Length: 564
View (cartoon, helix red, strand yellow):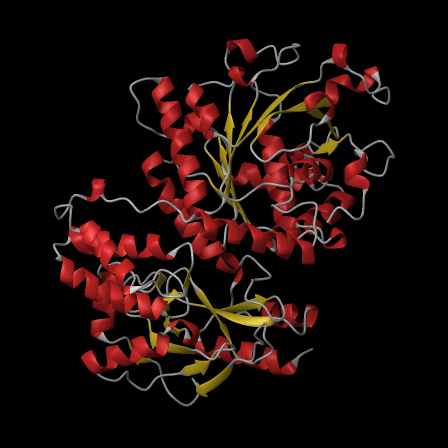
């Protein structure tokens, strides 16, 4: 056991600070920290007995009674802190640690009112970790090899109250001073235009906007724009009257900069070639032919009732969260919003997929083997980043839900089960459908996450084993089809079109077929445009009927080792 780390964990527990393990030399939690951060000695000891070199993190907010000011040395955090000291005075004596990147974590007593995580509200490079957040703590090791260390130890100096001015600034909604670290070529004009637009809406004139942009440009842009370019941005914004936000739009993206990004991406892929460059699906062949789920894209999964859409999407989310270290597949944080089932039902479904018959759980007729599988499933699920919400959901609240879950859990893929259970405005079903798909598409792109929306089919699609499986069978607005980047249609198996001699007639009822109806990035034609999946009865899990080990499973270009 790493006595140094566990000693720190136990000391933090005595202080009332809940802690949990992160991956070695990483900030990523090893457990569902929001549920499992603890003061409990046995739990803490068990974690570091299992992974002695794990890093340690402390849950912030009311649960530990702390709020932490994170000073980022790489993004002007110290300069911003100095400016605050000039205006409001020096910070009080309070525990403080040095981060592995050379920054500071400054600890304050939680004020008793909600203090959420924020970035840049106090100044560039100054972030707050409060309710719903956490910080990596000493003696953790940064990815660069540097160790987190206490400068002012909590055992020697009590927590100071948060300064009143700091609480007031954090409670005031304001634009962050700086959106992210350095602004590189290709992003400079957009960032400065947004800043100029914000200032113009508040009534600033050309000279005031120019001076502010000029200072920000020199400090944040790499390389800075010329003064002439900055003046042009300021001048263009003052053509609009204050508050006329709708008319203020950023300039067109710079083609040279975008191509540079593509070149850099190609070079990175050349150094680290991979056939699946997105988020892995639960199935190898689907991941391979699609490249995985891509961030920024909206996937629509449609099918008639009881064909297995939810099971398919839930299995995909679960196994994506579990990952597979034996195949080098990382664990990916997933969120399922279930408007049809309770969270208990969804988690029971997970346990069923991992080997425990649902009927045994519901009747209590559990065998010794069932309990073995149940405990194994429980350990896998609670230590994996899979999250479920079953609260009623209005479309206007979806952004807030996703932003919170991304901030607290790092969510990268979201399943909405299903579209008509999201409360949305619209004069009719067509308009409502369009509003839902358009909003989710925008959110996928803005928040850089993958979103899968489960949908139904119209009357034409109800005979799901018919010979004409078409995108137009998807219910709702035709614009929904334009919003989607990927469209899958799940149907019953069509024995009349069966060309796979390995599938016996006795298995037809167990098989569902996934039709790849559209894919924005899909550059490989799947034979027949579909993949068959067999339900592992009585287990509801889907097994992909495509063995990548078979000689004819892949086209020749996918077999080449020199493609990358």
